[in-house]
Every structure is written in C-alpha cells, then in structure tokens.
Image (cartoon, rainbow, N blue to C red; front, side):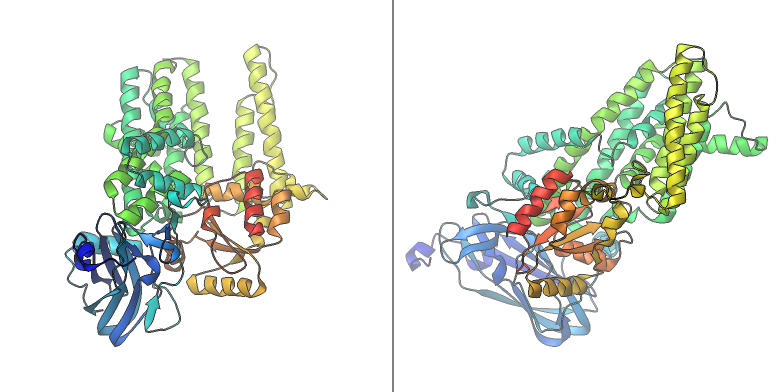
Length: 608
C-alpha cells in the first residue's frame, strides 16, 4: 500500500532502509551484501543483476534462505527481513558495469518504488570492499565453490525461491530444519541454546558420534593403573571441549562461507592416516601379544602410540579436534538449521553459541563415560589386560569403520570377518570352558565366530552388508533388497546444469522427483540405503518417482555448487519436487529417517 507524502515522513529513506555493497569475491564470482533495516524487508523475486556494459556474462544467483509472507499487495511472496549475501557467478574477463535491482517495503505498510544501483567492477581485482582482506581471501579459496554453468544471458533474475524458510505467521507446514532455523530467529536466545543442548544429548549415540566413545575410553585406559578420577575427568573435558570448539568453528565457517571442512577431511589419505593411528593405539592395548618385531621397531611404535594416547592435554585436544573433523561428518537437522540461520542472517555469534551447545550436549555422555573409565578401571592384574584388550578391539573396529568409506565392500567385509573371528578365538570359542566366566566368554566367542563365518560367506557370494551379511542370498523377499540395488536405481547428476536438465525432463513427463545428496563417507547415507530405501513400502512409492542423486563422495566444486544452490552444506539431505518442477521445501529430509515415517513423507510428495 502506498501512503501519502505526510505519512511517508515517518519512514526511512530507501537508501537507509536498504543498502547493497557489490564487489568481486574472486575472479569468477561477485558478492552482493544487502543490509535491511529493522521492520523493513526486501522481495526475493524483485532482486536481479543485469550487465550494463562489459564482456562478461552472469550466471544464476546463489540465494540464501528466504521467508514466506502473505503480502497484502502481492499475495504469498518470499522476503528477506535481515541482512543477507548473494553470490553471482561471472564468466568472462575485464571491466564491466552491473545494475542491481531490488524493491522492498516497510512492515508498517509503505512499499518503496523499485531501486537500482550501478556498480563498476573488474574480474582482475577483488573490488573495494573492506572485507576483502587476507583472511577472507583464504576462506574464499578454501570453499572451492564452482562457477555455476547456466545458459549465457545478460540478465540473471531471481525467478524461483531457493531454500526458503516459512514464516510461522503464514500457517504453512515447514520442514524440521526450517522449524529449528525459525527458533533461532525467534529471539529467545536462552531457550534456543537449551534446545540445542538437549538435541545434542539425543545425538550423542548416533552412528556418527558413537565411535568417539572407544576413542576417548582408550585414551583414558591407556593412562595406566595410576590414573586418578580427577585426571580422567580432566582428560575427558579437554577432549570434549576440543571436539565442541572444532564443531563450532567448522559450523560457523560452513554457514558463513559454505566451506564444509568435515567433508574436506574425508580425503582417502587422511582417513588411511587416521586409521593407522587407531591401529597403533590398538597395538599398545595388546601388551600380551608378541609382535615378532625387532626391539628397536617395537620401541618406536610404542613411542608413537604413547604420544597419541594423550599423555599430555595437548595430545588429547588434538585427538578431539581430529575426531570432530574426521569421525562424524554427517549433517543432522539441528546442525543444518543452525547453518541456514548463520548463512541467512550472518549472526555467527548466536549460531555459533547454538552449535557449541549442541556439541557440548553430544559430549556429556563422553564426559561421563571417560570419567567413569578412570574411576572404575581395574588398577592391576589380569583384569586390566582384559579391559585394555576390549578397547584395543574397539579401536580396530573404528579403524575398519573409517576405512570402509573408501574400501570396496568385499575388502571391508573381509576385515570385519577377520576381526570377529580373531576376537572369537581370543574369547575361547574353540577351547573347553570350566568356570562361569569362561563359559560366558565362550558363548560370546561362538556368536562372534558365527557372525565372522557369515561375513566370509558374504565376501565369497557378493554380499555387501555387515549387519545382514546373508540378506542378498534370500530369494523372493523384496524386503531384503541390498543397499547396492537401492543405490543403482538413482540417476546420478554431476552439477547444476545436469540437475536442471533432469528436472526439466521430469517436468515434461509430469512426474515428481526425489533428489538425494549422498556420499560414501556419510554414515547416515549408508543407513538410509540399508534400512530405508530397501524397505518394501518405501520401494513401492519410489517406483512412482524420478530418482536423482548427487554423489558427494569426491566433494568436487560442481557438487558443492549444487549443495549451495539449495542452501545445504553436506549430506545426507533429500529434496522433493512436484510434477511442475517446484521444490516442496516443507518435505525436506535432513539426516537419517526410518522407513515408516519416510514412506509417509513420500505419500505427501506423491499427493502433491
């Protein structure tokens, strides 16, 4: 609604209500930083970038999350209430002029006329923005976000909403991730932080965090019989704080710059090196084994192991840092919500505080277990050797679990089989048992021996499941489809252009689309394949959809660009598009979801 001149005197000048600073982020992307005054907002669809002069082309703008609002003038629209950034890919070289167009309103009722600013830029420089310092240059290079391949055009206009959140006043259904984002935006800081702490407690025993338990426990046990409860608590606290600070820093960087450090640390050489450390730690636990190595080599191995066991607080902190970056790279809904909030508002303080609270919640069980390990650990004798052997096996399991992200299924299964059979023999599965404890050990050993033999059969017959090694041999049972079958049903899309082509084809057919973001190193992705996509009820519904998948295993620049296109920072994430090619954002799934609720989610997608 346009107001009279007298009424407009109470409103800010448009240059004060809205401002934009445009500069070259690097030689292939420009960055537009919009500032929006309180109680004012900009329309997402009214933002566009036009080349006025120069030999360059602009790609499709990479938009942050927007808010759905029922506007009295335009109906349902997407708006920005807070400061936000937009990146626009640039192809070509030399000096050029770009016109930035935008329009906004005051919440009190005044709609401003369309605004436009002309900015002179050059691909040979990084512009005149004060933020282009050495630190931002380094982070920009670390992101390695691809230039988005789009049809060459002189104008890049925002035509469809990307990664929108939903205003709670709009009475619309929103995804779990967006609900969490809106909670942070609601203003009740302490409630939001307490919520994230509670969610962290619930996430503590998920597959992405659970391996940290034997890592920390082995550090505590490796201290020896002279360890006090206070020392165990201190070591545990240092480990948890290092993990929490690393999660927080990595999360803030991902929210502000899209640089997923955890994904970068899934490099095969890094995983192999870290697994080797776990093997050394495990060997140090097996003090009763004869390694059959020269004394000098054994001394060097022991020295390396002792240093990594955290004999100093610095060593423990390093182990916590590496565990956060390497062991658990998957994205959960609370993490994704916090990252969207940071990216949308630039509020790294509140977003970082939420992530730190989430991390500390995840660390509380680790703190309790680590302290208990120091308090109740046997002080001497045969019990101590048995306890250390258990943790040694646990560390070998963590090493195999990490290597399975990069090894062929057959080799991974073979390693699990060897570990299970060796543990069974140690427990006395093939020996006579006389005492109660020996009989218990033999029982557990026979279970492990049987499982190990099943795994060997799976290796020989082409299986690929550790938990269900013989499932692939079951005939006529569709509920036991292996994850490999579920995986091959997807059409792989390598970049934005490929994705847009696939979506266009599905739109022409009037078919709904499911887009899955997957990676071999993502534990939750593997869970979705093994337990959700292979379910009969889910499979029946998936047969009615076009299935697309972005395989983030290599984490290439093109794959990162697709992630950023939808405001995501990493797998697992599943998006749904209706028959008109429009994303149904309220149905987004981030993180693992069991088969039954996922089937219900598919019903909603198919109904639209």
